[in-house]
Image (cartoon, rainbow, N blue to C red):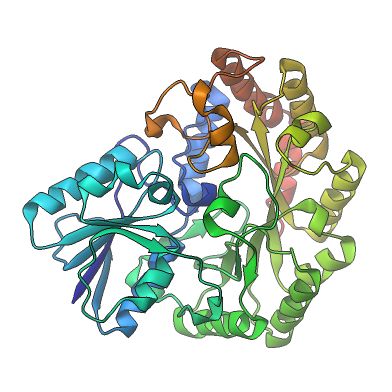
Length: 434
């Protein structure tokens, strides 16, 4: 059996990083003015990660004896072809699938959060869609498989059942995660899935469910494997909440220190799950970059989004601790959440400048299909064109701000943050860290 995992390119954005934005994908169109355009171009050049589900599924089917290919060529011969759905590339993905379907001889299907939330948008373009985590359905599939219709696939409770991805099927030498990680080659690694928080704007918990973790032994085995097999020098933990279980995180870090693999790595988590002692151990284990969601400086806005508020002083202390340890920090902010006003957004931008992290990304509140925010504003949506749900374009009627104002504030945020002598000085200082 021939299995093809198709990486559909976007005519508008080029390559879409489909493993980010909770799996809905990002094309990085941050704005039209100079600074947002420069940040967008830098982001497209500096971040290139594969769909991690493709890595797992490829190994699953190899274990079943299939011939597996990962390609951007829609004319590749296959018995089964998989396409990972995305918001900004959904029209083109459906068009490619329809063309493959008309050609005949290949069963083409879709995976991902978007197709899980809106299977009716995709089913006619192909032969099947998998709703939920696709690895479970494919692990349980027979050796000779002819999938069709809507396939329900629940969460995989035992993540240790996942095989290690075979990155030789990918052009993994091109993977990059700069400026936060300066080493290459790198690969993504998953140590946990799911989330136990309930932020309304984030679809991650809706799609992946409760937090589940691989055993520390299984993760450490994979780290040894990627060094021996692929000669990597770094990796990115793709967990949305890497430090949720503090003791497990410490055990994993101590295990990495004991292996002495000399790897540099990045992760994503929440600031309230960090402390100085933990950061010091993680740095000794190779942590050099961390992504955190700050979202807003307004306690009222955060409360309306079911997000816990953390005092500025504590956030500032943790980020300065990262600076002392030479850990680069990328902070994410969401503008235009329900309850936001012009004043609260301007205060958030000033707040970001005071935190002064290596990277600040200012997103527009986007009602991802399936998320609580989508249900909250679905009667105020301004378009059903999913390609506009790029996290930089206002797509619902806000109770306090017109869309044009939110867009202006977003562009202003990038300019005010990055066009500062202090930021430029600190950026070049941090760029020397290894």
